Image 1 (cartoon, rainbow, N blue to C red):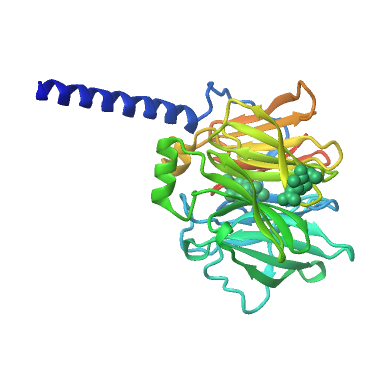
Image 2 (image 1 turned 180 degrees about the vertical axis):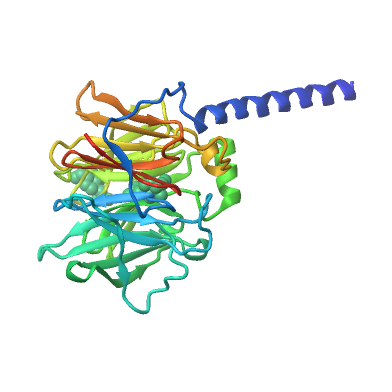
Length: 352
Ligand SMILES: *[C@@H]1O[C@H](CO)[C@@H](O)[C@H](O)[C@H]1NC(C)=O
Ligand SMILES: *[C@@H]1O[C@H](CO)[C@@H](O)[C@H](O)[C@H]1NC(C)=O
């Protein structure tokens, strides 16, 4: 009897683990097979070799690119991260590293999500989620264009921002940020992934108030806002969906709808003119975590139009199996130029 019970228990446990593994496998990669879909006028951007994880483009065509994040695979593990700047109005735009004011710890700079804000005086502020020594801080910079220079204004730390990832600026010193376990706590991350818990959230930060404004995501990742500032979009990477929230004057968010996609959604960029969402997707997250040069992670770009309507249109714009560009995390548009960035690989520029 004892033996039978033990056998039954082992069987049940085995079935549970099996079910988890299948559920996980489904969550970790796009649910249907993705066939390559190329665009005609693309080239790899010279000077970006070690990641272009997040890209934010100002209305005047200056693109900020965070590069060299550590935590997953890296082609240059000893090189600190950096912020690159590229002027997309130039004929052959070339990225240049932005110098950072003295006193900022460059050696441990590990930039992740970035977001810009233009102040009343036209000053440009840059928010950077940073992971120095596996901790999370948000670094606030002011951009001095004439000198290709970032003045470090302050380092923001808060217990509610202990494991930040994506960020969207709301003012010269306020923002929403997503939290997940991607970097800070490996054990929690694996536990969370394995059990399929929805522990990740969105936090509002201002010097006066910090609060959780949304929760219940498998892995809250990219975050952005509609051009009119009324709606906030959050990408749930492992939930394979985009959550749409209404933003209130007190900065709380109320859920409006969830758009289900059949792939892992990473960053969200917004076309400032049409309000369309552009998504960069890595297709298979295990290939990102367990990098194998023979089977690199791929890249997928989506455009979503009319997300608030009953039938948003979802277009797959670009797909590559990793033979050109590996593990894309962002796709940002400026006029007819599309930049596709990656977690640790290169960056692609396409003329649409
Ligand atoms: C863009 O995606 C990367 C990769 O997951 C993430 O680290 C970053 O925070 C995202 N950026 C924003 C603004 O959400
Ligand atoms: C924020 O504003 C919304 C909409 O007006 C309201 O429903 C909500 O209760 C407010 N939240 C707080 C914490 O005051």
